[in-house]
Length: 226
Image 1 (cartoon, helix red, strand yellow):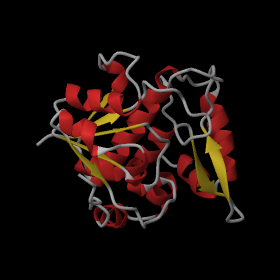
Image 2 (tube, rainbow, N blue to C red):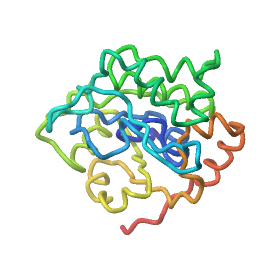
Image 3 (cartoon, one colour):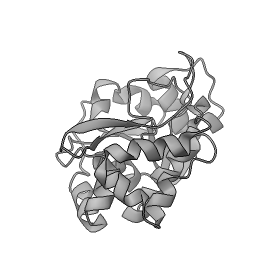
């Protein structure tokens, strides 16, 4: 059985996201779709000095309305701007002043935005001891006119998946029938009841063993209608 997960890349997403990397043989970064300006691809919420939550947004060049995630680029002064933004978030500011792998990963803005997001996903997956093969949907030969669930089905079939898995929100977007016609089963995770905090803060303040235990407690699937 080859399990494939396909998801937009997020900036150090919450622990529940990593369930996909825990169970997938192949994790596909869905970067061939329109960039969601108000989504979590380029930003996340972190804790400020007063305990409130606020957005930390990666410094990216302003995209055109129809730009794809794969086309996102950093600004020329991203490193300095990111370091300045970090001053508002004590956990982040503290770690960036240290000489360690997390700080190096956070401040490595070489390449495109997707390059950065892939590196951060790979870094966290390695810490959690998850080892799926990671690839990008933009590198596959899926015709651009194929959209929605059909596109996800086509990507999964291209990678010879026998099972496609998605987070609990997928129950609103995916049905089993199309996947079954291609010989692929559909698995949708049950709701995640752990912390929704950004993985940045959790890696700074918690033991990786604790985070992994929380993830592994939420690896069951809902029963889908046939």
